[in-house]
Length: 542
Image (tube, rainbow, N blue to C red; front, side, top):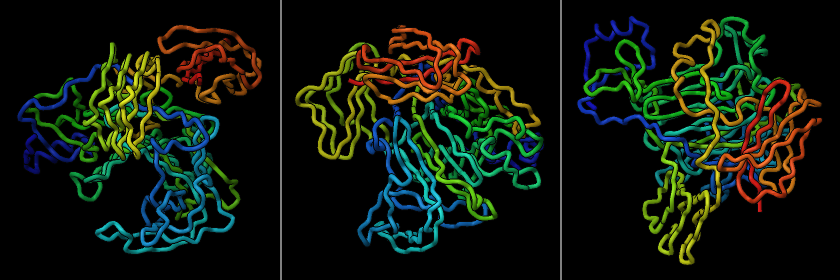
């Protein structure tokens, strides 16, 4: 692409038509070297249901020190002592003290909890603020921390695709949960899939009734603007009295998702597309996607765009600080961001036939490596070297030859999953957001043709545990389902109905899965009175 300079009077003319402030520079294509539309089906390339009693450290890592998001505890910022991994030995020690990770990060019954605690004895701590050329600490500072909390980030990076989590955010003043993507290799790129924080009215007066009701979406970039450019949006503006009827996202579990490709970003909650941003606009403010890009076309570029296709996934629970943003003295702790699962899908061919793997020399040291197939055979020439990762997934058979090597220091997962490429995702419809309640243009009108939906988006307050299980699967229903006839259907990875039965539960349905073969299944629970339904995946263990 070739950058074109335009005279100032023309820039002012374009901006006079209400062009978004996110679009700052003008470019033109001199050839047709830009991505075409990707209309392939969605395939699940990564999943963590947070089973077991500890975080899977082949997939996730803890912070390197207890402060990872800046050291300036200014008004509107955050201040918490994150559970961190280390190192502990001087001169490489980064933080002190070092409470156990389980103080703030736990997994139980298929849920990950990032827990904020008000420490009975405030933490008197030191932390690194500067580094030597050899990456050893150069300078330290110290402070007092009243709160501790949790943060995790993916070990590997992911690219264009669909990012999804089902979680319940904490309730209360000062809670700042986040689900976001980050890349800091050369420039700093960030996509916030959601953030929640203290809410105010248009006069900047704190309004506790708005807390946990207004998800915020932001992208950051410093490639074009060396300082930091950002494009920010939220579900509700400061006008009106929307807090009286808006959803409180801390009351139950919800599904949050992001669809990201070369041209666009679309944010979803519970299957509904709520906001979108585009990489390019025409000079009269029209969005450009893969269907409308033309060679030689002059266009505006979003200077806040994440100009990368490799980003880490992060979850954290921050505590707001300064300007009376912190929690009230009498607020009850602990409080948790509780996460049911994280899934990553990308558009790719659904593999069939036999996939033969005889050379792993192209494994990425940066991205999550997944090899998929209907039948997969890994030959004796395949080697996974130290510090590399590989996941092998087959929907039918998986063969590892005796000579296959996973060397010391590597991470290898190999398993059968009949449903990774036959995902039963419901179509979604755009949500109409009232303009007076949302001060942003382009909301919920850019993604009518998107093909991916959310499997468990209709009812989000259902818990399924333990997962995996080889005996009983507990399905914990909302209280308003007590005494109401519910239909429970089990579906295998090929979309075939395995069983269907009606229950009239009080609280929990105990589903007997002992007679199922080992593998992945879907369970659908439908309320026979309201028509509401819940659909999620579970694993029948060996």
